[in-house]
Image: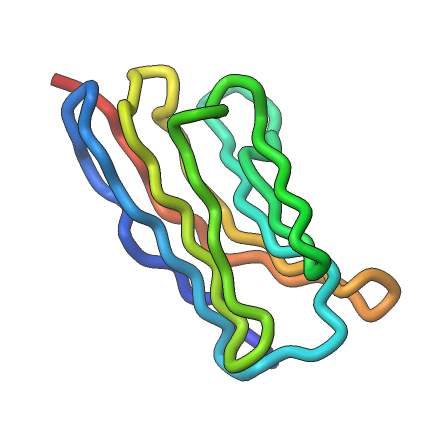
Length: 117
């Protein structure tokens, strides 16, 4: 059973930075997209950023210019999210996702990010 292990969440002051990382327990093939989602209390899970194997990157408007996604499809299956200028509204549980299209998708267990003074 493939597992996605996330790390890097925590408590940070407004304006601070955090880096989230996600690694698959084994290298995965036929990966189409790797991404990060988040879910705040009382809200639906939303896409934060995604990285496709062809290099296309998508960011939610709310994080554009502040968050940066990177990943490795070749040597391993890892995806990271560098977050800068964090705001209180970025507080949420962040989940990594690996989408293999018709071969299925995997989710991380979630890591809490809290932005508060």
